[in-house]
Image 1: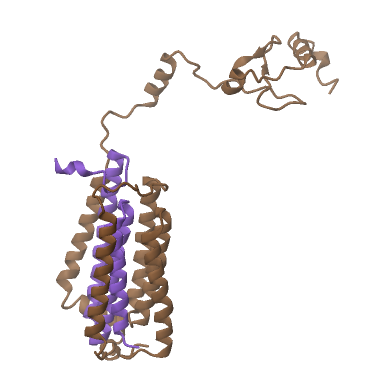
Image 2: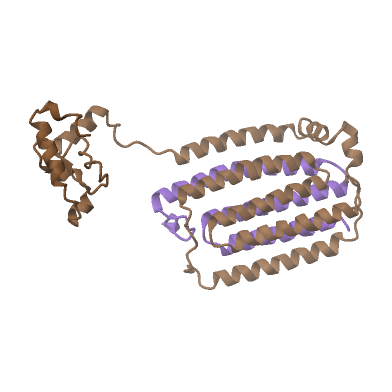
Length: 99
Length: 265
């Protein structure tokens, strides 16, 4: 087996996350799909670090995790705020931003 | 394990954990309830942590478990509880055919990615992290040397980002108080001014034979108190009659005949 299989797995997970973002309408599940895409990217970074023989990829994966944590905090706060005013967690509802 | 090529043991770990991770990801997209989605993606994240450890990244594996399955998933579940557990997807499509188009696009994208990577990477050889880890004495030491060396500025900016995110979350979820907080005195005055029953209602009667809530309480003069019966029972006239002997006993007691106390019972 070749370590490139990890990159293939990461591509598969990334695509599943992309499908989730495109298909699902619940804001929280869309958010989980974004998290899945970030995780898939992390797996690719870790696999590339191993294939190239230096630790830079792992450092970048660590930074991605930190950014993802910050993103989750702000995104969930936005979802809670929208839910408070609209009583809905569907991403089809808040379309009044365009007016 | 940290070598460039994948041994048999690692191949087994890859196929088991990788399959579980894909199952978790698919379950997350497919399941209708948001809580099930959260549990499925937690499965994916734990399996990704195992794959990180198999990929000579034990530090990242631990961080993955602590940050993702620990903090992030708990935050997700917390918000799910706030927003409502049963908030499922609406089946109405705002844009016509968007679901099918998204699915086709995603499948096409995945075929493109997998085929491209399969073509491009399958012939590459892998160096392995043995030398890189040994140079500083270990994986964590090696990461620290990079993080506090060439990546120091990025690390510092990360600190600013985290503080900004915490501030943003606090500001976004902050609810402004429009009216001054009502004091206990105001609440009490309001309760009495409305003219209702300010205290608690009398409890239902409790006797040796009945302690059900449909038994009315006896007042000292022998009559029964309607207020002691819960409203729905009163509306249905489902009130149990009081035994005549009990009424007689209460009448005797209220007449002040202290000699009967403690004799019959």
